[in-house]
Length: 367
Ligand SMILES: C=CC1=C(C)c2cc3[nH]c(cc4nc(cc5[nH]c(cc1n2)c(C)c5CCC(=O)O)C(CCC(=O)O)=C4C)c(C)c3C=C
Ligand SMILES: [Fe+2]
Ligand SMILES: [Fe+2]
Image 1 (cartoon, rainbow, N blue to C red):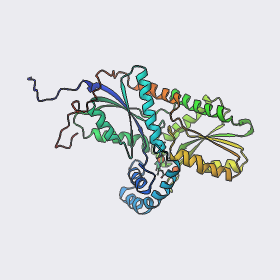
Image 2 (cartoon, rainbow, N blue to C red):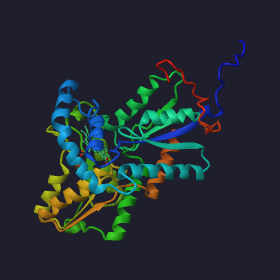
Image 3 (cartoon, protein in one colour):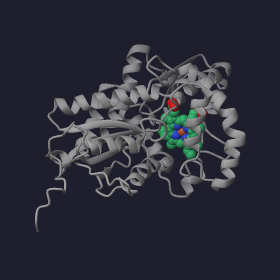
């Protein structure tokens, strides 16, 4: 075979490894137009709302978006920071810290993050990685418990891009890690750290620790989604790791959306019932959210707190999510190393962005 000088040779970094941390996404600004755009993308995903698309688009555009964009924008305003939406700020910080963790240990792995909805989105970041000469990507959703509505749709977005790629990336996925020892240890450390600063609940006196996970429609479990059992497993392992009396931890489900039945028990009514029953102190922690966001800061930190206190509860504590806790960065680093095994980061990562390692087939539908 003759060597054709016109055919580009693989860039040196074609076997370089990257990890893509994936989170849900968030609006670009806490205003109705931006929140509406984000909600439209999110709620039009057939993995998220499993109703026949034509019917759903009518309901979504006529009834839900006009009202919810405004109502949600007001809520986003209460959690927004100078640096932006907490979910994005924490996700970006996690990516930076994991990069440092890997660099400090001599591993040549590039760390980036992407959002399933909004920006920076999954195909854009994967294209950028490819243009930088990355050939192998580990997709790591920041959801420890697998659900089709979060994990599967994130992978779908990556594979949809791959379906249009001539020279594909080599891809691995981390499907779930609800029982990962590093993750469980990080959760336990987060709670222990909070209790060291704010005093411990008195479980003998009836105080409670509520572990609130994001809900999903109940029927998705009957259809085969392992989300519920994975949330329960995380809760049980955390109870053990904290060496609490059996039953001190209680698993509940928050953020119900729509009229269908979601996983139970629901968080807010559970907390209201504790208030009514005379429970003095509750601590609420969200192990399924690895970064604080609207659903933890506003819903758990404000709405549910009010319900508990109005029902007669006295002391309400929201324990912050894993965010940038060092134990969580350790857990992510170790998880990544386990999954990139056998993928030696052989090449030199070229940062020239010439796309030499990723020839683009211009004028065709392939990229
Ligand atoms: C952690 C796992 C999550 C699962 C599972 C999940 C399922 C799910 N969510 C909705 C609807 C909404 N979720 C919203 C916000 C939101 N959801 C998650 C995570 C999970 N969702 C996060 C991290 C966030 C916060 C985003 C942020 O910007 O901070 C919202 C938007 C907010 C609002 O308007 O109230 C909706 C809507 C469904 C329907 C669903 C499963 C079918
Ligand atoms: Fe959600
Ligand atoms: Fe909510």
